[in-house]
Length: 239
Image 1 (tube, rainbow, N blue to C red):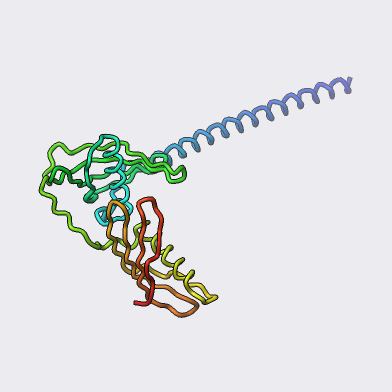
Image 2 (cartoon, rainbow, N blue to C red):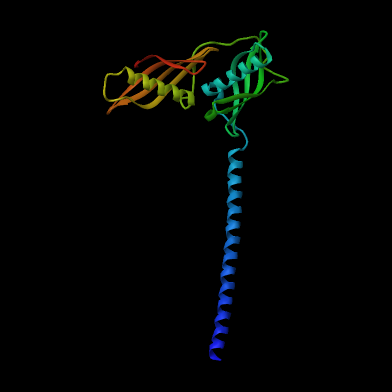
């Protein structure tokens, strides 16, 4: 009799433990699903922030990067529409992250002896080597319609411009290629930068600070970049 009673008690205990284990498993599953949903929500919020509204590009009119995008927009428009506009400059620009970068630009371009303003969008995905013109339209009421007064020549460019950084790297490589020293030059700072752009190429004048070992030197570098992105160092030497 006692054995039967003990068996019944053992069965009840097993049933209770089974219910406890099932309860713990259910609670754990609910918590896991809840946490996953929260993570997904936060991830979506992060992505939404990443793909937010366009942000202003400071000093866009002096940015070589924006200059490149503006020229590309005008060239593509001319090709698609059979026009003959000439790029003048980028007046203002914004950047927006959208699986790459969307450049929103206001561009000055001249044709038929007048300068007009155009709204343009260029989509750039550098890892795919993709660049496309998404929008190009003249502004309905351009207050800047005027005779062509484009002035050629070097203009100051922000030293933080991505194209200036690329130019400085090519200048440094050229210096090291021409040097007989076993100790290479290292770039310390781009002090000033100037650029002159045409439809076929861009010329750069850089004032850079370099170091070789403990010795620092200031150098002047003149570079040339073709429209298809090929660089050449024309001159490099002490200031």
